[in-house]
Amino acid sequence: MSNSPSPLNGRNLTRAGIAGAVLAVLGIVLFIVLWVVLGSFKLDAMPRLFASLCIPPAVIAGIMGVYILVRKPKA
Image 1 (spheres, one colour):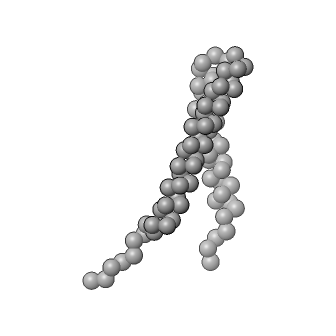
Image 2: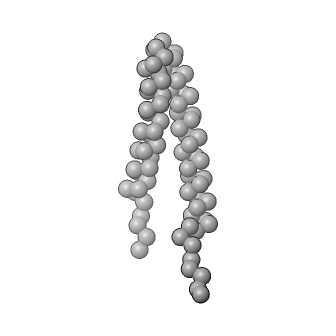
Image 3: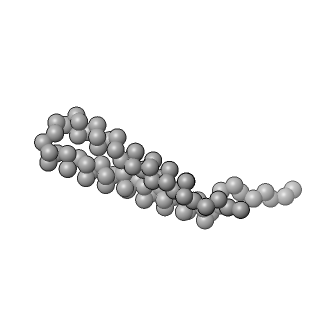
């Protein structure tokens, strides 16, 4: 019986966890900032909530897309 290597490398898993945590915190901060900024423009609650919930995931998706396109492939 041979021990096959685990597909989840500890170092890569840690880096992915840190990146996920950073993106999660970024999403929360963007939500709060948008909520406050849109509130200062005297918007109603529903448009504020809609924008504050939809824009942070779009920003995170954009960051991930740029990362995937810019990342150098391993040879």
